[in-house]
Amino acid sequence: MLSKNRIKYINSLKIKKYRQLHQSFMVEGGKSVLELLDSDFSTEFVLVTQEFQQKYSSILTRHNVDIETVTIQELESLGSFQTNDSCLAVAKTKENVFLSPAESEYVLILDDVRDPGNLGTIIRVADWYGITKIVCSNDTTDIYNPKVIAASKGSFTRVNLFYTDLNIYLAEHSAGLGVIGAFLGGASLYDFKFPQKGGFIVMGNESNGIGDEVTGFVTDKITIPRVGDAESLNVGIATAVMLDNMRRQMAN
Amino acid sequence: MLSKNRIKYINSLKIKKYRQLHQSFMVEGGKSVLELLDSDFSTEFVLVTQEFQQKYSSILTRHNVDIETVTIQELESLGSFQTNDSCLAVAKTKENVFLSPAESEYVLILDDVRDPGNLGTIIRVADWYGITKIVCSNDTTDIYNPKVIAASKGSFTRVNLFYTDLNIYLAEHSAGLGVIGAFLGGASLYDFKFPQKGGFIVMGNESNGIGDEVTGFVTDKITIPRVGDAESLNVGIATAVMLDNMRRQMAN
Image (cartoon, rainbow over all chains, first blue to last red; front, side, top):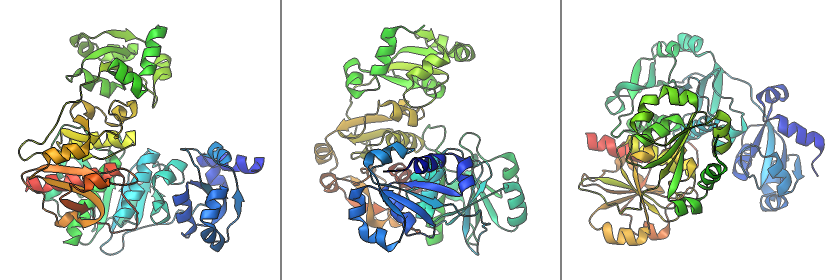
């Protein structure tokens, strides 16, 4: 039976202020928790149903982690975003570590992406396309928001995010590199040649796109060509299409 | 002041059974309602806040539609999926009309896409890439689900969906055409040449992919090349990447 203190602690982690205070976050669902255990995150404890514990006992034992068996009802009452019928973990957050592109590497830059589902999707897409570094404006949604973690489907364990002032960051680190920004009304993505030396791919806010200050650093304004009539693409979709075109070119 | 009957009627449209009974569906949010009014859908009535009515009075008058002014609180109490602070419309559904590819056209096929957000995103993506016909298995989510309509961001007015038994449909209509299916473990999308004569692009269920029966009709099993470690891509993302590669080839 879950203690009141633990319930209170877990519920507090749905709020950014308490995640920062405790330097902890929650991970929900079997697949994500198993990926968490296999990662370099430090796990505080895992709540599991009896069924999940039996099914994955060898993995859970191997990780030597604090495990508490709970009922499905207890898990559901804690879940912040969906029916969670197998497990929930609490782990320590990582420090906000500086990131920059290595030679011939592309780093993704997010300027004020606000929707947690979008950020989670972008992390998953980045992981698919082998992007391991994302540099975010300070007003981009917190990676440790439970909805971001959920939408990333475990990819949060493999992709690193660095939150910073993008103006200062780009002023100091973009010299000599391509800063390729997704805009409506830019040059066609299909005609653009991604530099082999790597650099930055910049995606903007859901409503307002890339801000004026960051736009000042953009070397190439690129648009995904539209054939039909939709006004825009979701930022997660647009990120995938940008990265797909970059990887296709790099592969050839 | 909204009548009890109207409240009851609108709430009933959140349930598929009642949408089918009344042959009606609801559309929420200013942008989507304005696109609805500009489309060939028949609108029964529109609920608007006074502010929205004043801002768009010329458009609303031009469409000669039954308008009722309501409060934000009344709208929010009806909203099914999000804060809706401007308007809500009820319109008549369209009949399930047969669709097949014209010469050199690509039709999208969805085999059991279940998540309403994914279906709405796919409709929006199709609209961006100029795909106007989507053929869905009978167990694919209902297009008139309010969450589908919301996620499509108005694109439901421009993209037609036809629900049918895909096995019968493909047996009768796929002869001589490419049936290009998205699979994990197929041939590389980057090496694939989309036939200029058009055909079908098939996307499968979120968990299980394309079903065995539909797989039997697939002429080309295609995979989006992965560089990193994510297990899969969301079906909306994968649809966008497939269509982007198809359009890029067609443009060259």
